[in-house]
Image 1 (spheres, rainbow, N blue to C red):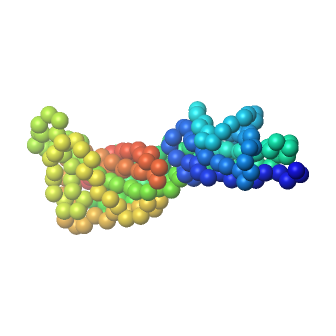
Image 2: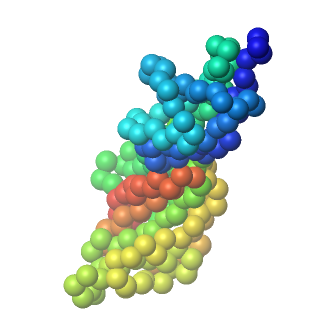
Image 3: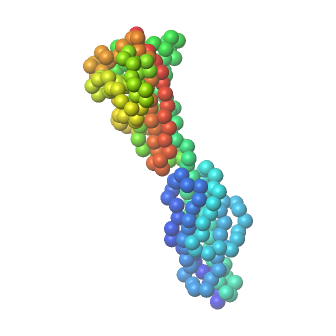
Length: 217
C-alpha cells in the first residue's frame, strides 16, 4: 500500500464566533487509520473525531488534521480557519463629536442638528446594527426613582419610562445616519443636558454603548 489516506473535515465553527472553544468532526477515505491534530503552531498530537479545543485567544486560528494508515502512509493536512471575536464594533467618528470639538463649551446650535451620523468599524466581523437613543440628563419634571427621560427621535415627544433600551434603529451600519425633523429639533431645549447613546452590534453578538454629551444653544 503506497496510497496515502485523504482527510476531510466535516464540521467546525463558523468563520467568526464569540466562543473560546471549538468542536471539529472529520473522517478519512480509508478505514483503520489514526489521526493527528493541532491548533495554530501547537505541536501535533493524536486525536479522534469529534475533537474539542479550549482556551482560544481572541483573533484568528487554524485547526489542522492529518491521517496515517497502517502501512505508514501519511496524508496531506486538512485545515479549517476561523476567528474568535469578543470585541464590539468601535465608534470611529461622530458628527456630534466633530461639531463639539469646534465649540469648547459643548453647546451646539439647534439649526446645525439636522441629523446624527457617524462611522462604525469592526476589525474581525461585520457590523450588524446601529441604534441610537437621545437621553435627557436633567429632565425638568423629576421622574420617579428608577425612571429615565428621553426624547423621541421620530416625534420629539418626551418619554418617561424605566431605564430600558428604547433605542431607534438608524439607516446604514458602518456609515449610519438618522435625520431630525423640525418638530424634533424644536423640542430640544437649551437648559437641558442631552446624551446621545449609540449602541453598536456585530454579527456574532458583541455590543457596546457609546455616549456623546451636549447642550443646545
